[in-house]
Length: 166
Image (tube, rainbow, N blue to C red; front, side):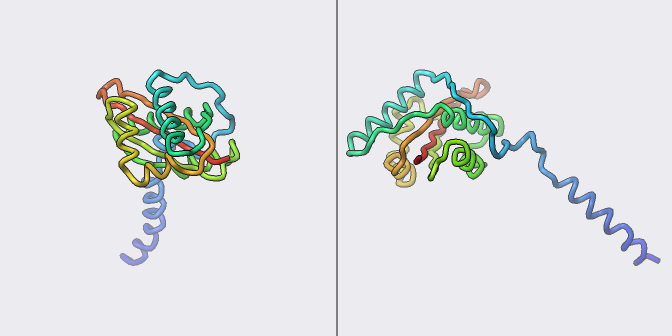
């Protein structure tokens, strides 16, 4: 009898486990947007960082990157995610990347993030001292976008810089 009871409760336990372990979609960014955001209100620090990156690329014989507002918008979404979740990471990069591939026709996507630097110069300096981040800045890309956001609760600044090759 005990075995029969356990066998009948096992499917219920499995269903309960699957439901309780499901991810709340509101805590996770959507995979792919359906429309391209064409406008982005750049703050002075973002414009400065874009200029610094392009000036650096030019100084080492590379072409300047063209900004695409939609890439800055996606970068901004990631900064918001990091602030809301109190993390500094590349979570959901594959979704952001796929979105840029689908909507902008990107062949390749790269991303740099930084946290709590006091200026665009500081973030760029840190990236250039990191081989992987420097490789993105010097990479074979054609376009980029930048977002710099300060968490109003903590005062900490988040940087996301995405690159694409079209």
